[in-house]
Image 1 (cartoon, helix red, strand yellow):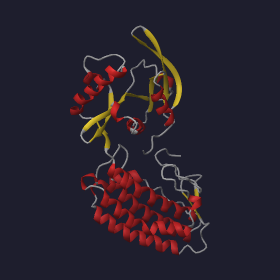
Image 2 (cartoon, one colour; image 1 turned 135 degrees about the vertical axis):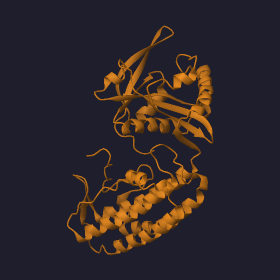
Image 3 (cartoon, one colour; image 1 turned 90 degrees about the vertical axis):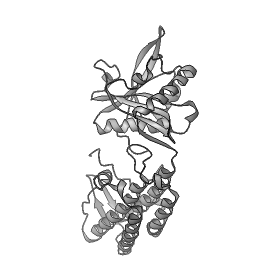
Length: 340
């Protein structure tokens, strides 16, 4: 299966993020969720400050207005899929290619009022198509090889998409800390955060004379910061490995090193480390590189973070710190990063 096209959820999918259970939702209830979607989406946008309409909370995610455009696309695609399922025998339907649509059609520049008006019209059309299903709930469509889903699933899936992504509009629009690409002006603030971490926790392991140069150590592929209202409180970088890098040598494909990850002490416990890791991870995916890293065994909190994200151990190396040999565990990502 093409890694760029996510697999369809199962017929009995249970979404771990929002708790939605396909098997628990009767067709009538799913249709009601769909019919209510335009009003719920409009109410969610009212709660988002206008200056946040076009701001994504993390690299690889969407802004509120892009989620709004996606809801419209879900209604259109679901209507067409249902119509084909009703009028054809096991039709092969096209993937939606959501991220491509958002990029190519510049959804970030869309007018929310216009999209909401379109959403109301297309959802009415989707509800009309659902009403025509009759006794055809067990008819099926296929998409990629091995993916066959019933009409019942199509309606439940549309309801899940509406419920889940209306919540995303609210969530992204209210996020206080944004993960964004690092700019040069961030370096002085990041250096101050690092000096505090070095004094209190011994990170970085070796005090650097020029912390800005250390953060920008080449060859850097990208770097991201956690920005709390204009104040930078966290950082991660992605770089190519040195020719003799012992961590990259543990995987049998081109690799990228996730490094320079830290979060200010008073901003911990808010999931920023995970969001920063995902930013670097996603960037490695986009370049066709396997993200790898090493972390000191004694740093159990960091090891637990990576393992919670599904990263797997691939070996151990050692570092020599002030004459003492310290073990480190090496990990790699299990696959594509996905959305936060």
